[in-house]
Length: 109
Picture 1 (tube, rainbow, N blue to C red):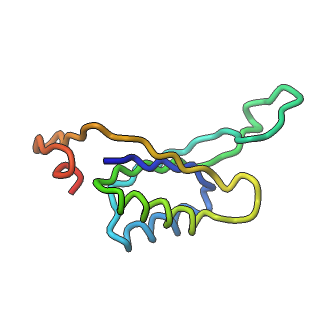
Picture 2 (picture 1 turned 30 degrees about the vertical axis):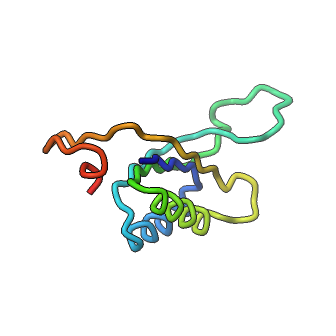
């Protein structure tokens, strides 16, 4: 299992979520966040200057769903400006559904 975590511009969120759901990928957590990427800092940065973004977290059961999620996020978040975002992929060792006690791939369905 993999976690696909993406930090993207908020104005792209609706398109990304709708495309993920249309392709059978659900179980999406969205958080508001702020930060900055690869910018050269030659001065102190005031926290009010941090860029507002959204973070999506999606745990998928297979490499095919992982790649599909990456492709959908990339396609729907892409623009030619700096700050389009990043995608990170993590290994997930175990998943538990609290309500039923199901584990791993069963807990994702």
